Length: 143
Image (cartoon, rainbow, N blue to C red):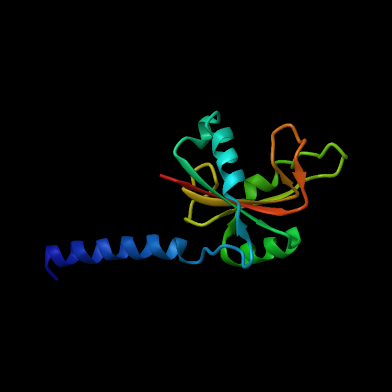
């Protein structure tokens, strides 16, 4: 094999691996994109240095958290480190349910360029005054 052939083969392998790392991602069936809240999320994220360069998509579903969790558990890799971080409590005292999944082969969402968080209920503001009975799917893609 020539040097050019080897380089082309290596480039094809890298591209194939990159495509297969994200090929399994899908939006949960029936979830609806929520652009108004997505814009609000982007505004809040501007103040977070960890969110610089991240493009957000927000989807909502009325399906239970566990059903959506099982869907993403089958196609993504759950971030084990994030499991150790307790979810916040609602003003009522009930716990928020959340889980984080990685879709690009990274070890954690901190190093990932393609991950998502599912959460129930939806907390639509940082003061916990706008809480909605939906499961949210927050997709993060970093450039």
